[in-house]
Amino acid sequence: MWKRIAEPIVIAAGFAVVVIVAVSVLIWTMQRRFIYFPSGDVPTPGAIGLTGVERVRFETADGLWLNGWFFAASGPSPRVTVLVFNGNAGTRAHRGPLATALHQHGLQVLLVDYRGYGGNPGAPSEIGLAADSRAARAYLTGRPDVDRSRLVYFGESLGTAVAIDLAVEHPPAALVLRSPFTSMGDLGRHHYPLLPVHLLLRDRFSAIDRIRHIRVPLLVIAGGQDRIVPIEYSRRLYDAAMAPKTLVVLPDADHNDYELLAGDEMIQAIVRFLQPLETTRSTP
Image (cartoon, rainbow, N blue to C red; front, top):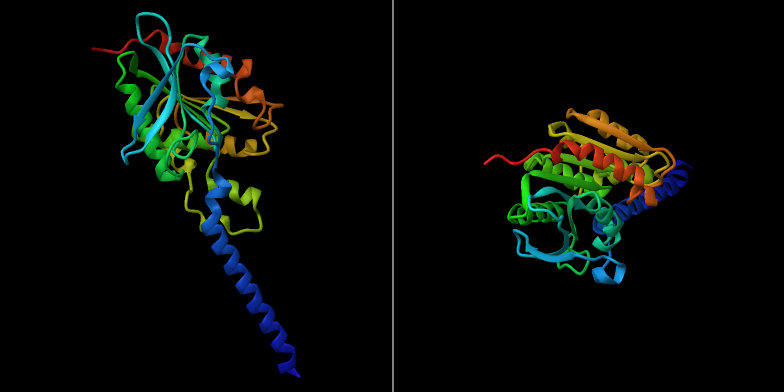
């Protein structure tokens, strides 16, 4: 009798193991499709109403050429320059309103697409995005109209982890993080609670482990109704930071709302935060 009872249990257990293994393999092989959502086509600046934009290209350490748009400020002296690191979807064209709003306040801005985005070659990964960020910074610091002592990193969502990594390696004058998160593992557990995401992640983006090394002024901006990066993750990252820091919460904003793209409250917060840099000059 026990044999008749045990056999179905063993069969069911074996089937469950097969399913778990199959799901785990699927997560391992397909996970980057759940993290990165690259878009290929980028309209011309003029097609989306942008003027005075310089199209730029620069090479990464592993030989990829990336495309970007540079918004130069007028005036004889180098101004504060903001290097923007995008989230996991869209292209530089989608950040046009952000660049325009910052540029109207006298800030220079570089918008760039990661590898695999915006028609760029390659495929995105954590290591690849880190290489892209280094190349973007190197390009900017090589321009005569950029003051490296007043270079600011702006990270959006996924780009906050990219910006934090670069800031640890090459500290900027200031760091702005919009909708930051603690780690990709934490977000994975939040959005896929039944899957062993944390155990299988290849690209971990563990920002909370790196933020403790940041010492430059830090501005964190978060949406109170964010359904992609819930505000508690942004607060946890903010609390872990040991740098001089400021937190701005837009209570009614969701992740992709205009308020968190180029809304006036967010732009004004950034401009106020960067105001001290406007009065500084690089030393000879």
